[in-house]
Amino acid sequence: MYSETEDLVRDLAANAESVCRAYLPAGRREGSYWIVGDLQNNPGRSLFVRLAGPASGPGAAGKFTDGATGEHGDLLDIIRERTGISRFPDLLAEARAHLGRPQPVLPDAPVPRKAKAPGGTPAAAARLFAASMPVADTLADTYLRARGLTHGGVMGALRFHPKCWHRDEGQTKSIPRPALIAAVTDGAGALRGVHRTWLAPDGQGKARVETQRRAMGHLLGNAVRLTPHDDILVVGEGIETMLSLSEAAPGLPVWAALSSGHLGAVLLPEGLQRLYIAIDRDPAGQRAAERLSARATKAGVPVRVLEPLLGDFNDDLRANGKEALRQHLVGQIGREDRQRLLA
Image (cartoon, rainbow, N blue to C red; front, side, top):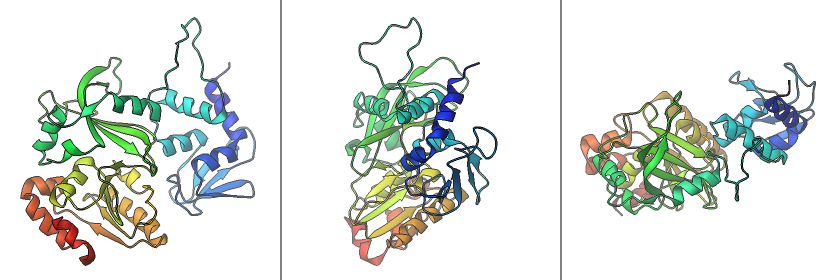
């Protein structure tokens, strides 16, 4: 019986080097393998992708193994990890697009006048962001202010959507809920994805649902650029965490990577002189900081790690206030940048 997924996997394997060059460009070909540091596309020699071999089995073309972590899988897994696509139909659409295959049209389905990009793609993310409104005087503004954050209403990377579709895992029906929308952009400023935080009807907290946050689009290497970078940059995980630093020290340029996994893979801007990594107090945050710090150091960029007193910097802000948070940062930030804490 024909399986399009199996056919796509075979076609990807037959074009394994092309897939690796597109999704793991930090690696290189050595013999019949593509070698790179890891699935986050860091330089190194830990992850091996087989470029040639039988059509099936452990030694098949397109199979990869990471000698450091024991991770293994196929080229679809690599595409999923590198793009951040979570829905399987969207993953297949991405694979078809790379291979130059047409997207399927369901039998007897009316042909749309203008085909829409599948959900989860940058195009879908751009549509959602364009349909959203500025944060000021909305439930998103209420939500942020409840967390001690007063600057969200003037940040272009943040918007509000009053009826953003939400569906928990296992549910078949989507429900419109208010949501804070954040733009994920690349180094050229192009929108590559969005992050959604669904809110309670009164805006005083997150929605009471199993999945309160979800991202779509191409996230890996990109970030929510809350303020423009300068010769320095402060990058961390959560949006509220990084807004808290901006609240206490508006002169600091801040980006949010959205998760510990994405923090370790953020692509740093050219010309950066100093990098500050704002971590959460958990093992995942520590490991992500180590990965990003190693990459920055290799590129010749000095690194300092900023640590909160509590779980994260928003916990610090709400518990102690922004003046106490500013004074806490003074002891961690480099002397040459301390004037920015007062800007």
